[in-house]
Length: 108
Ligand code: FES
Image (cartoon, rainbow, N blue to C red):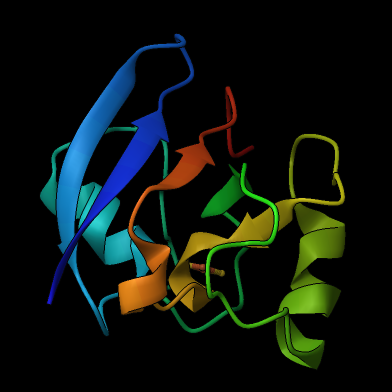
């Protein structure tokens, strides 16, 4: 099921992209050709270079961080905020339609 995500890049430009339920935010943003999420570990939650900020309350049907994600969030390059997430761990659901993601200025 297609959902629309709003992705704000590090320059403040908003991109409206179409994603699919079951896909990760990391993959959806990458497939849309938007820079800002490196994903150096390939999505196995061991690099913290897919840090993003989820700007939704509640966080649009997203599961809360599990222990592995919560631990890796301690290693993000820019400040960890209450809405910090790792994009590889965010699985899009039909409830994610309209989700707004902000990308940090850097991942290192
Ligand atoms: S891609 Fe490495 S932690 Fe997300």
